[in-house]
Length: 176
Length: 183
Image (cartoon, rainbow over all chains, first blue to last red; front, side, top):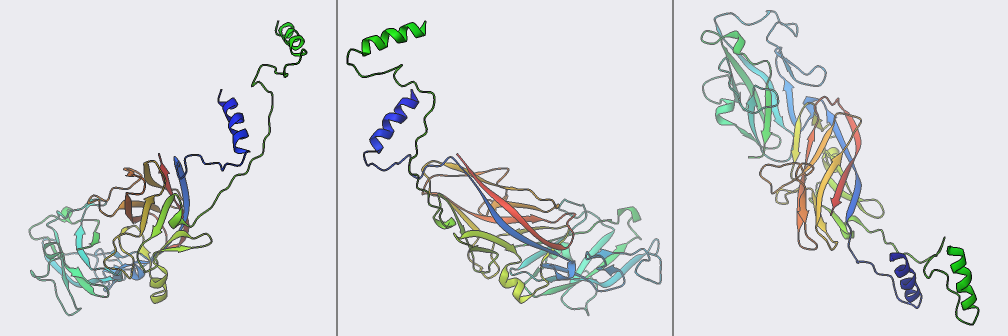
């Protein structure tokens, strides 16, 4: 049936009319578009993470923290039953174009920081030290493009267990 | 049976009527007709794609113009050739690099005549993952998990990019992002 209608319709169109079938209507479009992404080492990334002590390194591109005697350190690790402070361990620099609010997390792939065995602090300059002021997860400091934070840490092993020290540090920068 | 019927019919037709055999029946037809197609710039196409922002993370290029994306944007790369995304990270881009008040990098509009669901697809030989999300969605749900419905000539959606670089090594990745509109 549909076929006959087509033939008849074609005859009519041949008389001079223009073909118009549901003008502008479409039921499916699939558009493929180019996208280029540059993945770089941490020191060059939008959220730059740069080693600033022998307890941090950018070997292999990613920032890695080592308090276990690596990186040609003189000691082999933390003192037991002691609170240990490390200043200016690494630097966070905002190389993006928007302000960024910083927070740390201790579970891979999840947000939140629950460890009481390690507290992270920040200052705007290298002269700073880890103190009660300037705690990262208490303040969630905001850094503007071009600004940086120096990160310090205290490990509390007089009151906490070594097993509670996180083995992963997630760093989030989000729009304030 | 059919043949006898046919002969009988022909006999009758021979008396002067026009020859018709099983009216409408045919074994093969080939007709050639004009077909006019216009391939438009993305802005003007039925599925309108428009770049947002001026920092060149999203641009319109080629002939006809199609939207293209680059992270970092071209201007960022000129200012800092070493800049890029860190590995083992998730980035969400809602703004272009030069723009503070235009939210989104891609605007999609329906210039057809029926409602469509819009989502994206991404497949790569690398571990790179790229998604689009509605910048007005507080949850930033990926469109491929929750397509946005656009009615003709009324709705638009402004989209941001989520790029995941887990297990992705430092390198330049030239990929294809597919934007789908489905009735």
